[in-house]
Length: 126
Image (cartoon, rainbow, N blue to C red; front, side):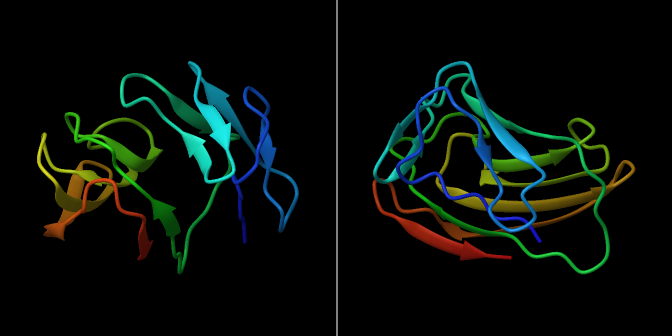
């Protein structure tokens, strides 16, 4: 199990998962921290999590808020590149449509559903 809480983090500093304590999420390209969590500018900011292998039953939980919808903005994207052994959650194109996708090799399964509400905190569990 892994859990990262970015509320009140220090801008520019990595955040260590608070369950296993062995993986660090390192901010890249300038995201900023606040009492609400980490803020990504929608351009090129992201968090790089140390490499690890995972499998079996897996769940993801996020609290997130979009201020605007850029092209295929990811909430998270774990994997080996686009359409290759990856799991991602984000918006479809430049719309507010939610896309959840899982690829094993180059074979993908995805769900397109509902919409993110702009400027509203959203709780998602997958």
